[in-house]
Amino acid sequence: MIRHILKIIWNERRSNLWILLEYTLVFSVLWFCCDYCSAILRTYKSDPGIDIRDTYRIEMGYRIIKNTDEPEPEYDRFALTMTFLERVKRHPDVAYVALGRYAIPYSGSVATSGWMLNDEKGTLSDSAEVGFRERLVTPDFFRVFNIPIRSGRMFRWPDDGENKNVIISTIGPGVCGIGEERFPIDKIRTLSQCLPGGDENVITAIGTTEQIHDIYWGKPMSTIYYPLSREQTSLYRNEIALRVKPGTDKDFPQRFRKEMSEQLKLGPYFLASVKPISDYKAKQAEEVNGELNGVYSVTIFLVINIMLGILGTFYFRTQSRRSEIGLRIALGSSKRKIRSLIFTETLLLLFLASIVATILCMALRFADLIQSLGIPAIADRSAWGIGVEQDVINFAVTFVFVAVISIVAVWYPARQAVKVQPAEALHEE
Image (cartoon, rainbow, N blue to C red):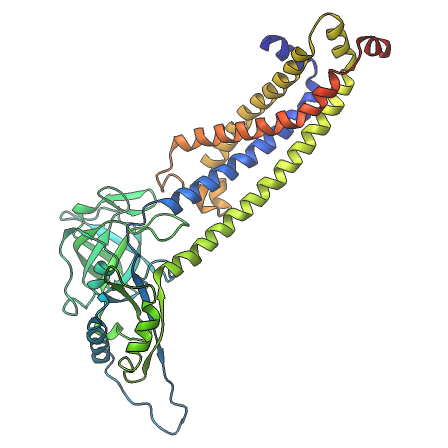
């Protein structure tokens, strides 16, 4: 039967060419929609490597002296910071509190830099700088977010606050780097970069930790954790995170502000807000949902057009084959067999188009055309650990999806076709 249907498709190749082109275009677009959604959802659902339960962010305000004739008093920012930390730690509900810059997960605050990786024998990165994300933190940052030290030791603060002893994170089992540029993390001893004027900045890796995953776009990137220096401490400019003890009530932000507002009026600083870290994650999730909603809109638009296109195409196609269908019925073919013939022919056309579309999609991806369009979830899919199995999923999901739509769309033309009376069809012939 399949061979017979293939002969019919070949004999009707002129009219089938447009159907094949339509199927190829639709299959290709839906393939990338499926790939995009899968990549976004996979990165979104992956283990972030941090625990944000019972964590909050404190924001401090800064009072400005309105009288311009009065000179601005000078404050010891580091001393005020230490007083702040001491008072917050004394609160009965607080377990840990940490300071940082470009540090708090899901806050959107990001800093990056390039470094050459060196082991005991020389450079590991072929004299090319490798991109790293930077976080300046105090040691309690790792306790606030339950980030275990994988190897080595924690830096001392503020003793190591010259940013020379650092901790680096992995992006995979035993490796660090960015995207597909990966290097054995346990071999790294120092990291170096050239500064303007020919100077060299060298930092020492004294410990390693596992990857934090709080960004859903672009390539996965290792993180360098620097100790926050004395000069970088500022209650207004630093990010402040704390973890409360298990079992603390959800009204902690309101109680904390009420109980600590007076105590945290330090110099020009005052307590401005206390928000759960989960609020920042929810805000970032809205951006992810916005991207997915755009893909869903394109998919719905395509589905409607596919159904209308297939419905119209096959309606006129079956109308032009009324005499053939009538002759088959006159020769003893059942209506069920005729419907099966039309459905099978539709699926064979889809299968032929899907092969062409799959080759086209693979070629576009390997040619880095998708990356040049700035679609990170697709371009960097391999860097996120998305392999060939995703191509199989894309093909299966897209084929089944389009096949169901095609069967639904061709059902009415097939139903009308089998209603034709053999005598009427032969008379028209």
